[in-house]
Image 1 (cartoon, rainbow, N blue to C red):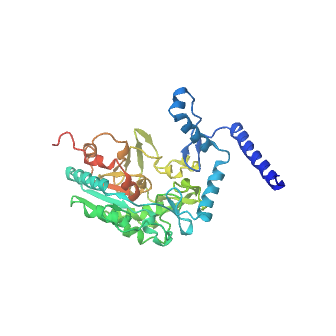
Image 2 (cartoon, rainbow, N blue to C red):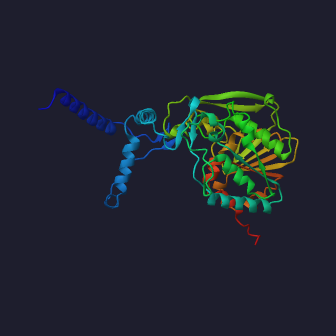
Image 3 (tube, rainbow, N blue to C red):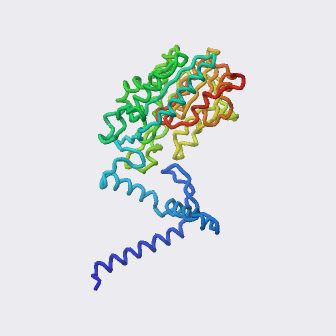
Length: 388
């Protein structure tokens, strides 16, 4: 005979199942998850083919997972339980460290890919007339060692086949390059400022302050005099930024603050981004969206050109990832023309493409995590049509 407690539990379970079933049917689908910064699955169309090949079942499972009522609450709850009750080492490849910092895994790097990238950059630098500088930006996991969980394997030694140590990765990349590429040590510069707010806690990017210190280091390396921090008006433009690392698990951490640096004696400039003329390097519309980092450069332009009235006739080309978006504005006082190129979206031969811009200096800059996974970097080594 069933106990009263068993009956109560059964009733609660039935109410729970039917209640959420009704909510699932009644509530409208959500197109986009702000917390995860991604498009959510829609109901798949049923057909004989989709049923027989299994695609309908797979699509319906994704649809239920993405459109489950109060999904964000359950994702946050799952993260909390996984972290504190189950003591999981990481959530979707992200560690939670001290002071609310989130760290992305860096391990088992493909050295074959790295060698192809080294060869591509070597060929690129030898074919250009302009000097080529190369800077790999360490991620926060390589700088904030004291904040990383003790169990995180991010600082393992190089074992001869794969790299799980970011500093060793950068050192090996640098040491394998020819004299035609001048490397820039950003790791030491950022480590010297690690007690300051130079990386976001919830995002994989550096902060604008971190980018400023990198700017000063790059200027010193390429032979120009950088501006000082006192030369800028520094303004917080958002204190509610939850970045890419937060989106992987809705972690129980506080939001980040985004700041903007405006040079007090700012040159006049104009911007052309993928053929569209703009009046600013900043896009205010993104401050009301989840992807607030896209406030810088309006996202990921393939080719952005800045023309300034700076007292120089020099041209710089940046070949980059998104770390450069908050870095580039610091350089507008030093060049009359700046080109920012993202190899992911350029299908022309990059040697010819960059040469046609007649640069005085070329700066290739990537963060270590992105570079270690990038499959477009080797485009730098593609042979131009007029070369053998």
